[in-house]
Image (cartoon, rainbow, N blue to C red; front, side, top):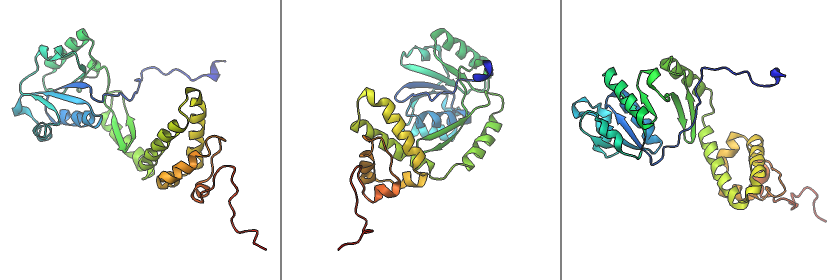
Length: 252
């Protein structure tokens, strides 16, 4: 009986896509590690506050501050920095391990998730090595054991991905939004999901990339009968249930 179910292999992390759009995140430190963290946060549309003395700023962090991409506080961390109720996450990248541990303890008291750079036991979550291609994001994590190896594995995975997969995913996203307008009902959920699966399996990445707005409108006409034509049939402007003359029978 047990062989029918996945074997439990403890020691891993629950890898999630954390939505931080328009949420306030506190970054303590302004060095090279902080620069990388800030890029990740800004790419996720977070609102970032950086606390660090100006003399310790990495050139990239200084650039973000100069161009108002982050909110900046020119001093060392103070416990009162955690009083802002809108803060949902705290990251630290400081050279002082004692200070980092103290910040972690304060975060625990306030129940704010924290990541103390290079101190795995004081991290509620880890940063992995991420490959990004438009909407596609692939993260490789070693659970804090080998960040460099995560980077190597990530590069190997990325090297084997189709070069146009990001564009294909973007197009599928547009098609899904259009489908929800065609069939908005909750009861349509299972059918919508299965029909989109059929499209993704039947059409190649090249087909999905080449699909334009008119192709999508014609393709959506096949949703009601729950069929998926080939890309070529859609381009021929065939509609479900309508015979299209192709000249093969001739005329008398």
